[in-house]
Length: 450
Image (cartoon, rainbow, N blue to C red):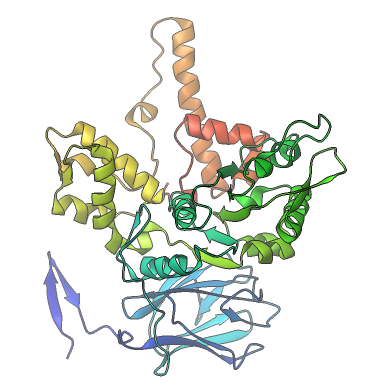
């Protein structure tokens, strides 16, 4: 008999089928070109696709390079279509996001996958710690990441962090460096989206024509370089980066003499570069060299158990000595939000709330309506203010136009900065500046409701 429990005004059905927490889900290809392939989900996150870097590789021509993202979720398997060409099918229904349990069958390409259990497999080891550097987390996904980073920080390996904007990829890179032998050496951050293509060679690798200007890689000699949004590097720069990684040498722009450098390279991307490889926009050999260790950073909505500890950590930093706290009901309210801007958006929310509240305790009223991403301010939804001097009225109108235009543009392009820059006929770095100016940068636009 199905057991029912009360939660608010809704009865909770606790008899819904799920995988026992003691068992590891197993995804098996039972028919089609990939038949016989299987993966035991010992880790919290896995991917399925045709590219050889997937956890479950399917030799199926109708399966995309990265077709599915899988996540263990409370005794079930959370399946998310990764933007595949031919879709993911549950019976006659195309699904983009679903939670499955034992016995469920999906079709990807011409292959049928079944959810089973593997009694012989054990979940991946978790870190005994609930923090790594300035990062905190109690969820299985984060403690798996902490365990990995604890093992590789002291090595010379290249790391590739993949996750949505605002998930903390740069913080992870900084924490890795702090635990490495290069902790006291230079740490240089390169934002690949902010450097104009015309000068990117000289900025990164130095100006060989003048013979005097070292680039960012040379300035980091003996230390670490962190490349944010590495997938945005132009093709020619990808080739030069590959040579640097393989030979630890570079040639300045316009120069002919190779210069030896000693740098460790960490990189981050908000998009799965395997899609870019499939489209011919990113070098596969560079991907393998950058991703000696791959770290998939989950979005905040996939690790809601971490929100209370993240709130406490952020309030410690925001308070700067003042003991700021947040009511449990307010935290519970925040845990229900989708957070398209992830931890960055949560921090902005808590900063605003700390200013608005009357004391040192943040309540529900101060965080009401937060966590949904940018939806336009009250002023932007109101009629134009045409009062006062022409110049002042024009300036106010331009601000509103830019915010509205950029929001609509980024929604249409699902947050793809390169696609948006082409559609708007703006240089990518100029578009980025505009987004930052209007506080629209770093939002997961494909997760923002209209």
